[in-house]
Length: 289
Image 1 (tube, rainbow, N blue to C red):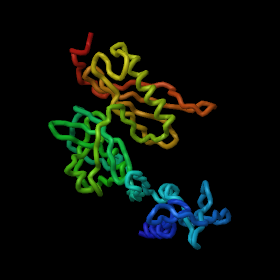
Image 2: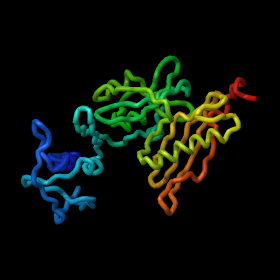
Image 3: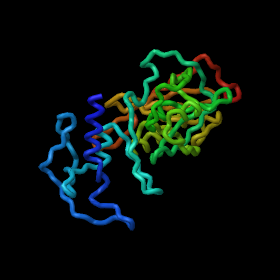
Image 4: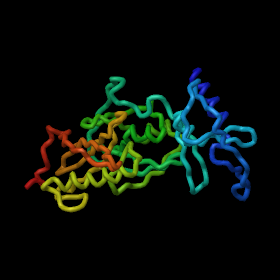
């Protein structure tokens, strides 16, 4: 409770003009005079903070950018240009959830009909994986929690091979603040990575992985109608490891890939290993030679 009170007070005292050194008027932005104070120190819970830029002083009040506050206070800040709206969204302890942390037993589903979506939610745009199993569409919980949706307390199921948790829309509707707007993604989904240089390397490596198999032709699809559905960043601090979920010849695999940065700052793959996550499932004979 004490920690929550301190964070709320800190946010309330600084959030006033965190957008810029300007005041919004009826007809747009009015230019004002403000000052950067390099001699000011900002402390969080008594610990001085290292800021990229000094605080801004306007009308005898101190302001920080919302992007800075979002990192300090575990909040998400999104900008919706279509409505000129800044969304400040709270996060929660344990986000995203570790499916193995509680030792809970879940009902089980299996990888079946996968589809990636782009989801617009509270001013942000995210990527979400769904799995339709036994005529029911399930949403991957880690993707929903990345959006800031607290999925604790709702019913979940666990996918047999990846161990990922999923939930139905009916359950998610109990905890989201507004219904997301979903649209199809026709490319490989990237989850947990925002660095554009790394994303470009991952997409290139994904194509290389597919072409390395003798069953593939050119492009993302091959003789077996296969593809890489998702590239997920493994949540280990300081490690650039990724899991690529592929579908080949009626069979699901995971490629474990690591990236490193050379002395010039360029990212590249240091290799990958292919894991058969369905060892007891036979390949579809229609796709074998």
